Image 1 (cartoon, rainbow, N blue to C red):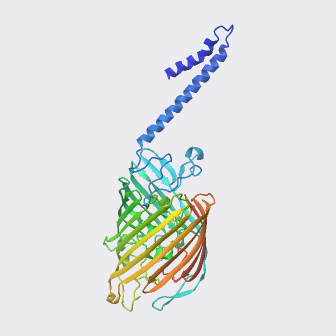
Image 2: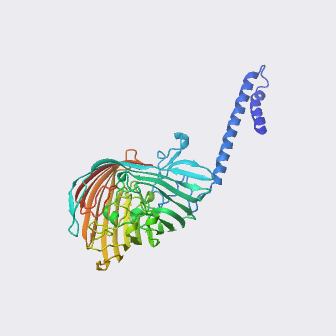
Image 3: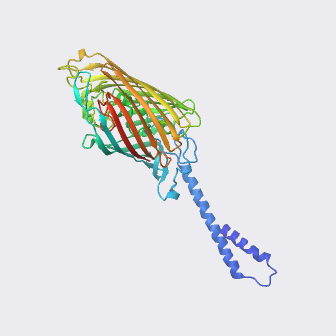
Length: 499
């Protein structure tokens, strides 16, 4: 500061030297100018000190292994995601820096960064939606493959269907990560697991290996790789995907990439679906496992979280192929309720739960069954258009329980196809889909069409409308727009908030 003051005095003296022959000198003006110059130097010094502090802070916070440099703040590593970063970076208008907004910084696809230091980072997100559902176009009854006539509840109601509040980030070192959340399915008020507190912890060794433990989705199909909520519809899968998939469960896993665009995940878990199941209900055999491999050869990514549809508008053809396999021994006592949040019950293709006592005849009870399921998916995206498809095969065998020797092994097959187009970039999307389920106990299918309107030209807010035509749906519960046994038309409208 002493050198800066001397420099300021020297600069202030220049006018005096230049006007040494002048008969009179305005000393007060010279003093004012000297004060102004000294203030300018102090301000510049303060700015330099602040820049040095910021540089030290950034250098003291190491980036996660395998991360690539970026001028924008990096979002937290999603604990349930196993696909690369978004296809297109957010536009400058998307990002609202804390300095401009006066609050936490918003990172698209990451949420609000509410705290960051050299010791920790905390991101907060919120997902919720309101739904109007009309099932009055469904038949009031259906007949299963055993000749039993069952009622179908034809709902028409408004619901704040779900809210999902996750917190994520790291502690002490960016390699040690957490993903913890509160999740409520308001259509299941009063049922077990209507409100769930869950999550997982992980260690990110590098881009090739992440080790995790806790609750996450089994990577049994594409939609459980971690794309939620970036689906074409709002929080509802096609019926084939819902029928065959595994669900959220507790376990340990490895995931990462073998090479850019070639990703894997392997998980060892308690059962197919843990939400609503207490530890005392488990069968004490840890033999549920699931593996996934996906390959994105052309762009090494498939949108944020591997999203369905092409909201981002890929200028280069994006492609993916994925394969999944899951095996589990399921026990009758460890099954979630029929309306439990995100339940994944083992059903026959006529909608009956396989563990129902006397389903296959008087005195026959399936207490245990071996479940094996494989799926193969493929898709492409280009300039707002997308085509995505998946095929499934499931085998049920090795039954345990009274009288089960008369039950043959059961093999079921299915498929789904979804297409979409951005009619107006980042504003209006239309889509259509179809799926089918085929087995010895009946067939089920659907077609559907819908639209998504993004009023802010961002993913965070959308209005969705969808029509579904069902033919013998073998799956359903209150959180999704279709019931078990549904035949006919369903309409629903959704307003979604997701940041």
